[in-house]
Amino acid sequence: MQEEVENKTVALAINGGKLTVRTLRAAMLKVLAEIEKKNKDSPKIPHGKQTVKELAEQNQGMSNIEVTDKNIKSFERVARKYGVDFAVKRDKSVTPPRYLVFFKGRDADAITSAFTEFTAKTVKKAARPSVLAQLKKFSELVKNSITDRVKNREKEQSR
Image (cartoon, rainbow, N blue to C red; front, side):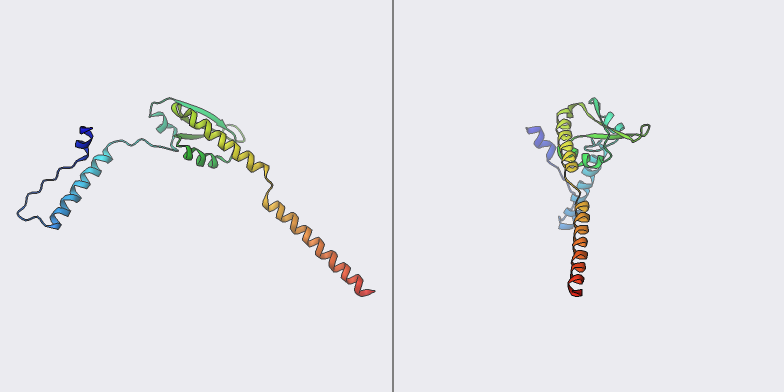
């Protein structure tokens, strides 16, 4: 506990005859720049979608699942929601192209729940009818009823 507190404290020593707001501000900016420089030097571990190479460099074992759906973008949203580190690789040798989703071995439970939600979404989306198709059907019905009314009105006027 004490070591964490020591790591989080910052010591600032300024040599000067008179301490003004400007000198304090300049010193604080230099300290912050040094801290940012130190943080940039340490490698960051990527999270979420990444390349297969970045995923392999983390040395945590990889697994993969084959996806044949061309709408892989919706899977990416679900995987981001579950916090899964994954990489998508497209296999062009097969038509239609299939996608291999690589993920860390420790993320197996999260990836299965992400895939169940993803498949449930795609099945639900496929089950509901297209709004455009329904709109086209109803517009055809309306056009037919209008022409029938016009014909009936002409018949009544000619009598």
